[in-house]
Amino acid sequence: MQLLGDFTFDGAPDPKVALGNNGFDPKTIMGSLKSNNGASSYTIPAGINPDDYNEVWIWCEKFNVPLGVARL
Image 1 (cartoon, rainbow, N blue to C red):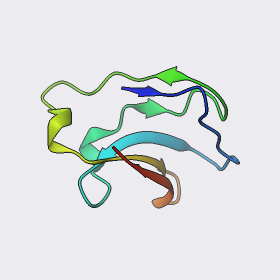
Image 2: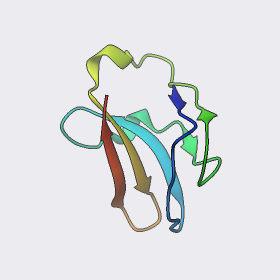
Image 3: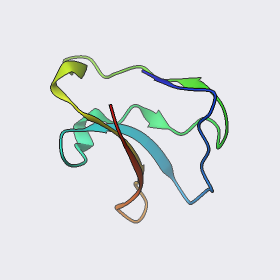
Image 4: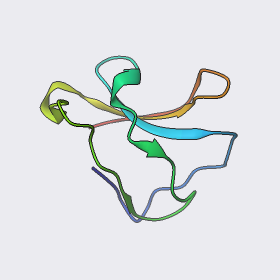
C-alpha cells in the first residue's frame, strides 16, 4: 500500500498506518507512519485482502484514537 507524494500529516504520538471498512480495523496495522510528508509504502499483513477495505487510517495506537482517514 502506498501513501502518495501529496500526503501530509500534522504529527501526533505513535501514528500507525492501517486499513478500515467504514471503521478502523486493528488487525490491518502495517506499522508506524514513516514520514509526515510525501510518499511512503507499507506492507499489508499476511491474510488481509485489501479489496475488503475502503479506507486508509492513521491511528494513534498509544491513545487508541483516530488521527486521520481517507477513502480508497
